[in-house]
Image (cartoon, rainbow, N blue to C red; front, side, top):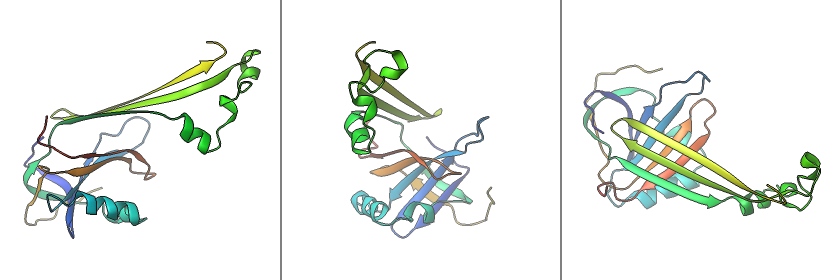
Length: 185
C-alpha cells in the first residue's frame, strides 16, 4: 500500500506510529488500524517490551493529527491464528457450560459445551483490511484532524512491526499482531 497524501503519523523516540481509520459504520463504532514501526530494523523486541510494560503506552503514543507523508509503504500481508479457548474460559471461571449438566435446563436433557475454538484472519492489501473471526463450539450430549505544514514524515514498513486494530471510542484492542518479515509474501 502506498500513498503520497496526508496520514495520521507521529514520530516518537525510537519508533513511529501510523493510524489508518476505518470508515464508520451504522453502529457508530470507530475503528482504526495502528502500525508501530521501530526506527531500528532490529528494534521490535524493545518496542514490544515498552508496549507490555507501560500501562498507558498505547494511549500516550497514538497519532491524532494528519501530517504530510514522504515515502509511505506498507506491505500486503495475511495472518491467521486459531486456538481452543476452552482452558482460558475455565481459568476465568466460566465452568458451568462445560459441566455435564451445564445446559440441561435449556434442552431438558444432559447437554454441555465440550470445547470452543476460535480462528481469526487479518488481510491487509491495496484494497484495505479484511478481518474475519469464526468461533465454533462443540456440544456434548447432543447436537477530528488538522493539517499542519511540516516536513514530510517517511513511513516505510520494510522491517518487523506491530499492528493493532482498535475501537477508538472505548480503546478496546480487537486484534494485535506482528509482522516479522514484511518483504516475504
